[in-house]
Amino acid sequence: DIVMTQSPDSLAVSLGERATINCKSSQSILYSSSNRNCLAWYQQKPGQPPKLLISWASTRESGVPDRFSGSGSGTDFTLTISSLQAEDVAVYYCQQYYTTPPLTFGGGTKVEIK
Amino acid sequence: QVQLVESGGGVVQPGGSLRLSCAASGFSFNTYGMHWVRQAPGKGLEWVAFIHSDASNTYYGDSVRGRFTISRDNSNSTLYLQMNSLRPDDTAVYYCAKKEYNWDYLDYWGQGALVTVSS
Image (cartoon, rainbow over all chains, first blue to last red; front, side, top):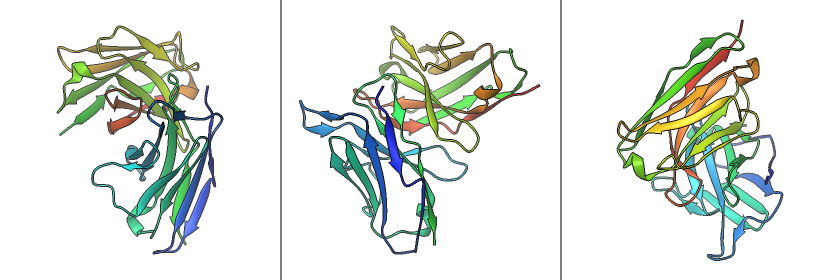
């Protein structure tokens, strides 16, 4: 199974500042046929189900603010919130879909306001 | 709009059984594979099970294989999770989730059903 490792476990960022979350896969999740990485990012606010933010490592879902961006390739990926807003307080998860089943998630990164 | 509504959660004793349902609407249910994902209190996300659109294949996580059964009724747009031999570490919120057509990322999630296994 592909193991997904996120860092840090939590971070506190001032409003308007940048937040950066890292996700590492235990093997490459680059789908060579399309040169796309099989990585999704989810946001889970307190008391809510996860919400899909980004697929293919960098493709924002419709309606997701452009302050959220995804980058990386192969085994190392990053979710960046360019200017943290109060409504961005949440836990963020990465998930690989290169080899399934099983679906495997990172352990989550809790983002708080400093 | 896509809606997924879970039901059937509750408190059950260790060794007991429970069946979760997930009523789907707003999309062609019989076209999409479906997943169950759970989240223990204060913990991260754990994949539980998957079923193909036509129920031809099912897959399970190691921790539930042999105890849980995923199924679906396409005529009623409903997904199920039969949970037997429940253990305290099965205590979690269980989410049903729709996968993207071709790939296993989850584009819609239900609100979740809480299952508590306790004596």
